[in-house]
Image (cartoon, rainbow, N blue to C red):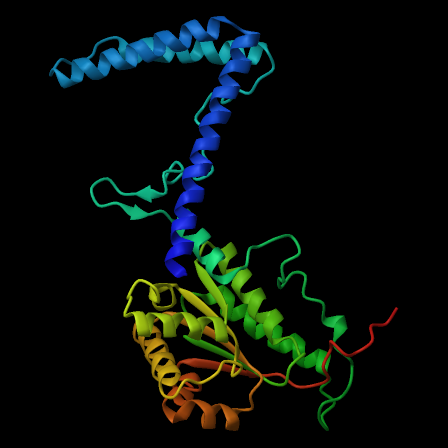
Length: 321
């Protein structure tokens, strides 16, 4: 399935390039309909460029072509402005300026462009940013009740304010700072929401993320284990920030799940790649379910920031009018 998503991301890039080329032709046709001289100038420019290339291949230094092209460009821009069109109206149309919608970068050794990798991760995680995506800016503390959680008078809203600040600092520090962020506590307290806020903030900073439910992640890894297909599980091992939601809801397949999860966490720690995990399990159950090896990686004080969520399930709390 992961390979299918990669192919889809590459195909979408090719389709985007095709659509943009069609848009370029449409713009040229429209500009020519307003100023027919543009077609003559464009043809002359193409002929000059072709002549220059042919001369260069024959070892002849092209002369006058650069100046001729500059003059033609100036005439075309003047005609565009004369008809209230922007001067870059006939420039190539690209959504990605880095790869120019080819999907690849590099002169000698080709590599996938970041735009393809980003789309691949979106398809894999099933998550794309929208104006309504969870974010720190839109995080609403008023949904959490002002109910005291301890004898010191700390309320659930006060606790969530502190937890939000910790998560925000973690997101702003990536790729530096602690390697692991563990969010634990009962369901309905905002763990998944804050996890998604972290992911969005990091993506906004131009860093790739991959967010997956624990069940989906372990399914992909198990498929790779049985297929012995190294390409299938590669994203989880290489993405700068991996976010695993709802750890503890996935079925355990003998020792396969535990071994693969340990290998994943160990690899990411050794390569200083950061991981965020949310779970509804108390720490005691987390240790019993995942063994001491995994537990120690998640709660290593030198590597991990561990945040406990407490209070009422806000999904069941009536909102104030």
